[in-house]
Amino acid sequence: MKNLDIGLLRTFLHVAETGSMTFAAQRLHMTQGAVSQQIKRLEQMLDRRVLDRGKSGVYLTVEGERLLIKVRTLVEMNDEILSALTITEVTGTVRMGVPHDLMVMHLPNILPSFVKAYPSVEISLMAGSSTELTKSFDSGLLDLAIIEEPATHARGELLAMERPVWVARRDGIAWQKRPLPLCLVSETCVFKPTVMRELARAGIEWRNVVDYPSIEAITATVQADLAVTALLPSTVPPGLDILGSEAGLPLLDEFAISLRLPAHGASAACLALAEAIRLAYAVEEHDT
Image (cartoon, rainbow, N blue to C red; front, side, top):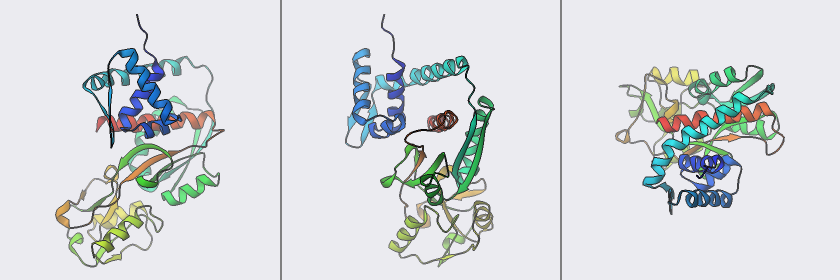
């Protein structure tokens, strides 16, 4: 009787979740060629194709769809068993950077289960724009960071892809005004270049509304119908609406939510938190 290789199944899972050999390789810290070879070995073991390759990525075959349902459970069970049997307690402090919007809307889905599983790990959080956090990570002030960056220039390990949307008060009229009243989370907001460029291309003049921006100030300003803003769909606060194409505002560039880790020397605590982040985003992607 054949035995399934968890390593091959894990690689298949990451390829299926990202739809890309390249992004899966980034997640797994492998070369794209190694990922391709592992998928080939899995298909040989199963004696059937699980992926189809196309110009825009890879796609699950019917057999691959059936396999994926079971693979996620097997990989999670494998990790749970190994975690339960690991005697060495993980300790230490992890300096973690998170963008303002993800701090509010994403972090609550990541940290509670990690804190429960690793009670001896202390997390020191730094909030900021992705531009600021990238500088802090590159200068060694952070052990780990979640970064929002243009998909075409993403350097980190891919966690998710989203396109910023225009957000306004439900039944508000701010989006109809010209110049367009606009507020962004900070002067160094990573979405600002695409917002400015696309508004200019559309010939839409704009004006800044908030002098001291923060995610709380932005939310309050938009809820008061004083301005519109640009946010990732998954970070839109309750009570605010995503504007449709009928609003006449331009389409914005797609962004990657990426994980930044040191290439070498990351602590056990840092690696454990990184894996918890990957799992949280994988579960969220699967649920949606």
